[in-house]
Structures are given as C-alpha cells and as structure tokens.
Length: 179
Image 1 (cartoon, rainbow, N blue to C red):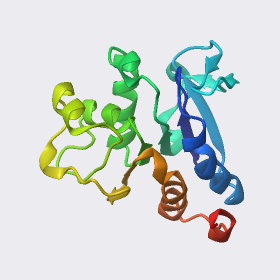
Image 2: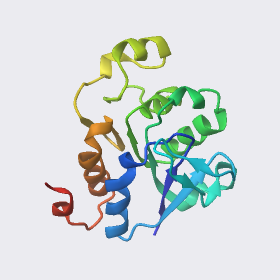
Image 3: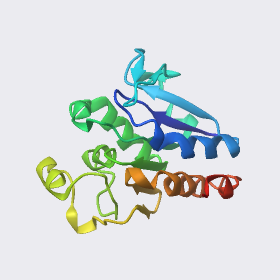
Image 4: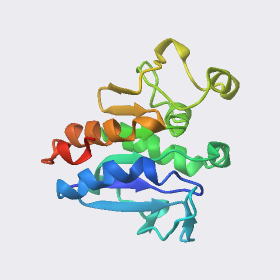
C-alpha cells in the first residue's frame, strides 16, 4: 500500500491534522512525516516533533497522497523552493493533496491550484498581496474539493479529515468525529 506524506514545518498547526491523522490510522493507511531537514520541528502550540525523513529523502513512487497543515506564519516558507518543487511533483504524479488553513498558499505557489476551485484560511487582502491566487476560483466555503485537491479553512478540520479519508477510499467510522 502506498503511503501518505505528512509535511511538517515550523509553527505548523497541530490540531488541523488531528482528525485526518486519526482517520488515516483507522483506515490502516501508512504515513511518513516529512520535514525540510532533520531538525526538531515545533508546532504552533509548542509540540516538538521529529520527522521520519527529510524532503530530500522522499521517494515519490512510494506515495499516493500528501497532507499539509496550516502554519502560524506561512511566510516563513515563502523561499523554500524545494518544498514548492516537492508539492508540484506530487501533484504531477496524481497524488491526492489535502491542504488546510494557510497551506493552500503553498499549492498556489506551486501552480497546483491553477484552474481549480479552492478555499484558504487567509483574508482576501492577504491573498491579493501574495499575488499567487487566482481569485476567480476562490470560494469562502469551509471545505472545497476539486478533483484530487482538497482545501479547507482551519475551523473545518473535522470535515477536512473526513473528506481526505473518503478521497483515499479508507474504511473508517465518521461517527468518531461527530459531536
């Protein structure tokens, strides 16, 4: 079975991954956490994580999906070309990509959102300033799926995780995540 790459970067939002990771576990989907380097990564709430591998070690043929959390300050990743290239390659290989909160910025920068409907947890003014978003395809919906690309606002992390599990055709119990 192919794996899901879970990208972790400084100040990533831990809670935005919680339901998606739980569903991947329920569905017996193997995951590999991926970082830009081998350093410890601290999330926005202070959780320190060590990734399984660094970006340069990823063998694309082993993965069929990619999960990206939001980031407290997405601009810290603006110059990480290896990250943008990796996202572009995963998309070109047909991966299912799930991106929440501010991380759709990385998809837009990689060209993955070209001619695709999406949402993002950034203000319209912020999106305009970044200059990589085509606002024609923007939706203020909580979650948007366009083909293999799933985007969501941070507060939609439950629906986001469920949509990702369904896109991967995993067997899981949605009721675990209902109030």
